[in-house]
Image 1 (tube, rainbow, N blue to C red):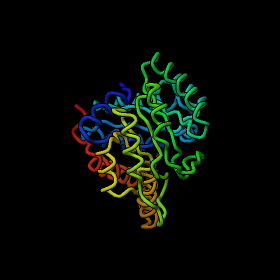
Image 2 (cartoon, helix red, strand yellow):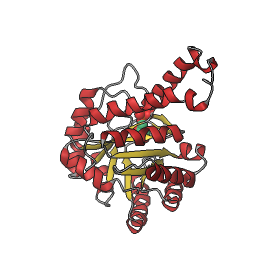
Image 3 (spheres, helix red, strand yellow):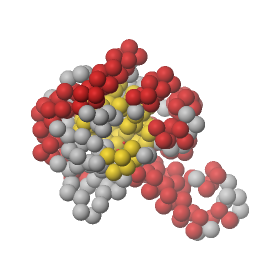
Image 4 (tube, rainbow, N blue to C red):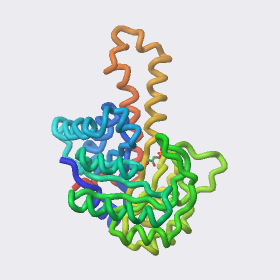
Length: 288
Ligand code: 13P
């Protein structure tokens, strides 16, 4: 059964590790991530962007697929199904469809409007027993059409949103979706520490997990980050493994064109990526 992200993130914050949020794109992605979490006894958050939700057929299709896998693959670790960078309308749709957690990305609104909309969604999430992530200070780069300028969060605005009672807070600290440019300045730990100081116990979320050096990830966790989002890295791993299979002509050997064979190296590469991240985040064995 799906769970909210609230309890797993409180445990991660107290235990000084982070739970991985891995974006899903299709059945292979979902299965690979769930199986890896189960094998490693790690809690996990499946992230669904609005674009990926549409691609997979709609939010109800996603909920049906994930719930079916939890049962039929005997997944017993805590799993949250979470909308990633949701619009207000997208949040309402996912609440209705049976997600267990949502992110409302109101970072592009003036802070007053972000507060108002977040407040309303908190009320609905409480009623439904769901967890809610909010965002202050846009994450740089582009993810599925959501474009952010990458400005760092204002710690006072973070406090305004945290005080509303959200379950987790994404604060921009120089992180970027997609690959980091060669001239990237790195994460701003000053901002992160200032945000932490203002929001106290609130589990913090680090978006743009792809390509952040290990020492920065560890430092971020030590400063209160309890959820780390990874998307592009699984996509790159999948594409690379699939390209190698095709370039080696394996699809032309025997029944190598069978989609179950063609997509297998990509799925294995996702599993390996997820495993590496779970090791780095420290969530292995933390399911109990
Ligand atoms: P990356 O694609 O950079 O890993 O970022 C993922 C993310 O933050 C999803 O919200």
